[in-house]
Length: 140
Image (cartoon, rainbow, N blue to C red; front, side, top):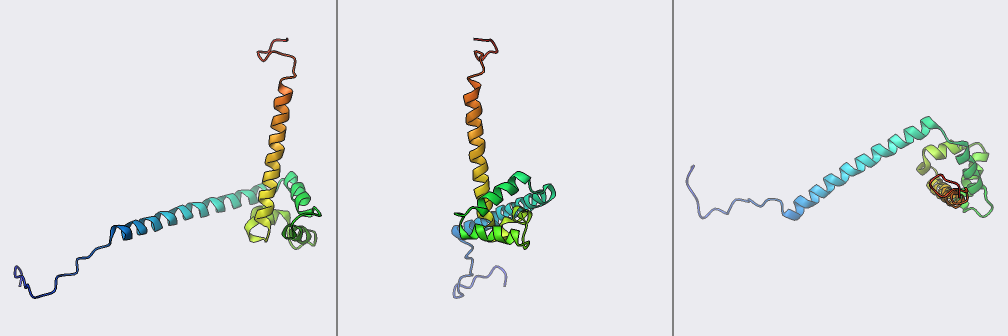
């Protein structure tokens, strides 16, 4: 019965997705894409840290932070497990989130390294003015 309209029939269900529904689907899709990128970057970082190994300075910093008497219990626990041979600092370095306190230790070490770098930059800046020249390479 093409071309025939039955006015007594209920109207067809032509309700489509609302703008809010479409926006929600788009947000979910974009969030999933971003999380995929984050996962890829985390995996690349893990591979790079594994290939490069842990720097002896970082090991010493981990030891000092986690082995301090006033260190939080979770960090002292990491320290104890390393010294018992159940874990290595490389394990913590490569996959910090796999170990209780690992991420905290990594961020604490990074902050300490940042403070040390800032202090060194400040020291160099202070020394820069004491080299006996006028800034243009000429003696004063």
